[in-house]
Length: 329
Image 1 (cartoon, rainbow, N blue to C red):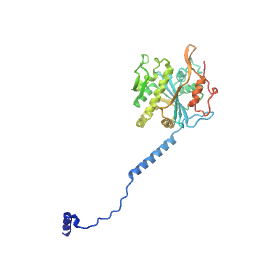
Image 2: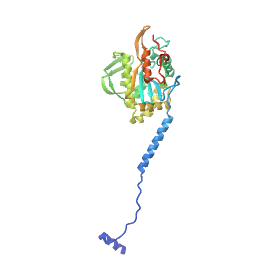
Image 3: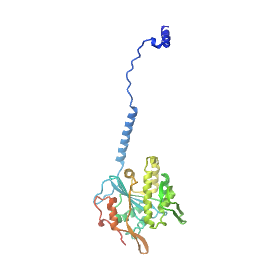
Image 4: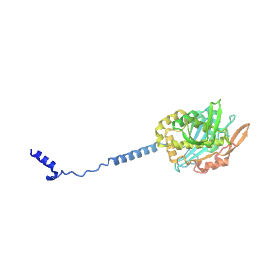
């Protein structure tokens, strides 16, 4: 009863009762979020270290030594019949300097081949296509550039189309109106000049078009190089990480390569470091010639050496004419 009265009295006049609140020790702030961030940083660091340890640089043995963290890879694309490599581009990835160099090799380049029309692009079919075909291409390319690339990857047309569509297309500034129709190939190219997003089939038309250029193949390889640079720049973004498993499956199905998963990972990391916006680009210099009734592109030795020694070659030392074995006709 007393308690009830005191409670009532207190509620009527709270200041009429003197009491001491119970002592509460100061509370420690829990830094849960900071601990979470620290743990996250450690996990990311460990994963990054594991990726770096797992990645393996692709490299062949060179007789005079090679520059550190520099690898060269030949990227090729086949024509509609899958017998010729009408697109050939040498990537020089300098992970130490953070520089990417892209060197185009014209498809009609004259080789030392003994077949009827010994152009570089036809070596793929002459040697049987697939891995054997690429070994044939590499053999004759080595004569021209003086060293064997550290790896290669060749993609057929349908694989190229699927890859572009998978990655959401490519924003590209088409340099001129392009129209070409060939019913024998079921090929229609119909593009308007100007900036636009190209899907897989439109991109295929862009990289194959050449009949409307004043310099035909020479202009085409420049457009191909610009397109690849744009594609790499746009595709190598965090938002596309979720597409990597599907892209990896596509590579296994539609790409012939001698690069294993660890080497592809190293290249991906190196390309991410290099970026592609400021990639240096060039075409093996040369001139056209009619030989035995066929038109060829004959590589210029002096000009080729100048490009190789500008950073394209993986050699420590400057290359000389003794390294090359160019067929000059």
